Length: 621
Image (cartoon, rainbow, N blue to C red):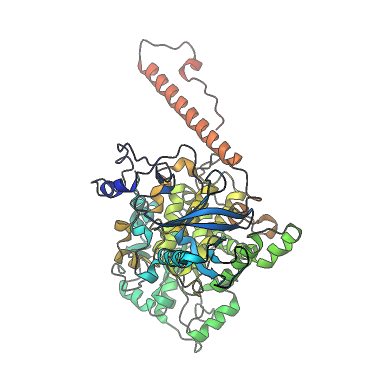
């Protein structure tokens, strides 16, 4: 991130405490604008007058050190590192004091000491920092004066606050926006938009205290004919008690997408009559279909292996009215290793001569293909009205979330709007318990934790692939997706903190932190696709062949100055111009229509021709 010209200024430290205590609404972005020293820029970042460094409200400078930044692209750069309780800055001391690095501490995965007391090579003593967003940072420091030890301890303390009994920065962030992003998703309103409840499906609050399933949301949609006692019995036969519940219903043919976890069949082939009957009840909510389709996201061999640990899958011999298909999507460990291989080929250098074979060896695009292919199968089965669909993997919070959310994105144009996509993420990922804390490791120093995995990144990559194939179908642009991924790691907002809804409620996340959607929705034009054409009930079927998939260069290789596009990005600049043109045309059209209405309502004005009654307005849209 670089400081843009004309950015607003942050008050000196002496003003911070008094302004932070001012009685203003947390979401009123204009409440502090009357302070002559402080101005808030459109991205929510404030600037320090004395240091000309960006700082957020609640962000405090901890220390600064003179270092040599070992830049992998331009060689050693002498600079000064500034560390706050939120991020690390590097300002060059050699050129025009340019801000070279701006790294949120939440992005840091690992900090290692480089060299020792006997190190003699140039720039061989310092720190190596590994980041979650596919970059590495290396700083050389002086051996005398404990400068490395001090910087290591401070970085470790604030990059991994959970290990030091410190709060994550999101709980200290005092940003104020004119939109409260926490109000974006209301489950009752979203299900009502889908036409629920109806005479086949009901809303239940059986999980309001999270006693039925501690990783599910409080509100669930279940078959009308299934009692709460039925739900409790089914829960005993599903991994983590994650029973089959409705995610989406087709507005016309009434087939549904249902999500859950694997059945607890085990090696002995256990059965549960309530679970078998429950899936039959789901099938019977649509009398037009004879079979229920079950998509198990796992490879067949993995599903069989899970029987040894008490899991398993729905056998055709037991679930007579169901068809089972395996989608061959690999587990979190395979995806983690695949992304590591991607990092190896994109950072710091891209080897042009073996690029295609190197990319193929990562298998990343193969995994993207399998996820998209599975989602297409789900969407097609529902859209065609062939049957309702049940989706699960092992526990129903990783591959299941990928498949249901992508299928819903293909089926429902509402989710392709900015607000709709935010609701989709809140619903299918956040409320249904994707383990963000475990998969990302917010504030946790255990970088080798086997639970870490780029499942949500994969989902966003799939969305980007779809947006490339359907450039007019999505209201949001690439910057929107990259912003979501950046703040997946940053710990600036509370949106992605913790593993489930019950944990967020316990920590009062919606009361004590700011939502990422507050930032985005207070400046939507920045994230809009000017080529967006709103279409109702259009189903998207992306082509999931390897010939039509590509590496997302603007995300995975954005840190390489030799690869990334020139700044300012000419495409983004054209986007801005098109948005301004569109707004101007809409404004002119409204004014002309208003003037025409006034003429029609004035009896003294009698137009001599039809053309006078309706002025012709030429637009590009």
